[in-house]
Structure formats: structure tokens, C-alpha cells
Amino acid sequence: MKKTRKPSPVGTIIQRKGDPSLRWRVLARDRETRTLLLERWDGKQTEIADNDPNYEVAARPNDWPFVPCPSRQNDPVVEVLQSVRGKLVSLEPMYDWVPSSRLSTAGSLYFNPALDLMTGDILIAVHQSGHRNRVSITRQFGSLKKRQARIEAARKKAEGKEAWSHLGSILDDD
Image (cartoon, rainbow, N blue to C red):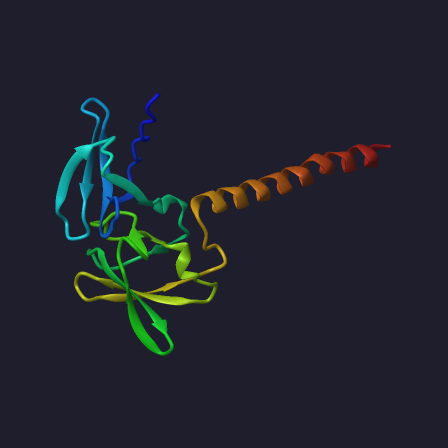
């Protein structure tokens, strides 16, 4: 039995097999025609079959840690800079970081875990107009899965306190 590749979900970064030099982001998936609409960082788009064996998943940004990137300007982030040994180094889009949407004016920035960003690190987001703003790595820095797990743990802890709180009122009535 021939094994078929599972179609890539929207937001996934894919590349041609054996060629990591050019990456595409899945913008949309058409279930009727079984195709994927892809977009490169420079804005060029193409469409491929959703089971094309020449392409492979390079990264799943939804599994990457992210931070919000607010902006007072109405322009998208085009570059992210990191200070390395006192020098500003440009991070590679689609490899090191990905915005939640290439054309969004604000939103989240997803960072490759291989960057090993730590709490307290400061990055600089450069917008299309040249406006720059600081992006701080806080304690909440984490992937969607990690954040959901943290919220669930806090909810369970709060439920545990509520479960025992009614016993106090029962004991007080005696």
C-alpha cells in the first residue's frame, strides 16, 4: 500500500526536497481541487498539489514560541534584529522568524526554537516604514501548546482551591 503525505495545514513552511534555500508559507488549502496556495517572503505566490512529493515540511511555526509585536504604525514587520556580541544581526525570515501574517500591521512573531531565546532578551522589529520597536522575551514566551498547558494547569489549581473552599463553610456551620 502506497503511503500518501498528509496535506500541510495553513501557516506551515514548506520547501522543495533537498533545497532549503527557498521556503514557502502555506496560505490556503482548497479541499475541492486538493491544492495548496503558497507564498514566498517576497510576496510571490504559486499553487501546487497538496500531495506533491517534491515538497516537504520545513517548519511548523504554530509549534514555535511567539511574542506579541504591537505597532503604532500601519505597516508590517519586514526585519527582526538581534544583538549578538554587541552587533545587530538580521534574523532570516521563514528560517529564524515568521510573522503571524506577512502583511499584518501587528500581531505575533514566531521564533525558531533553535535561536535559544531566553527571558530578558530584546529583539528589534523593523517595520516597512522604517519604524522600529522593541520586542521583549518575557516569561510567557512559549508555543501555543505550552501556553495552553500553562493555562490549563492554572485553571486546575484554581478549581482545586474552590473544591476545598466549600468544606470550610460546612465545618463552620457545626
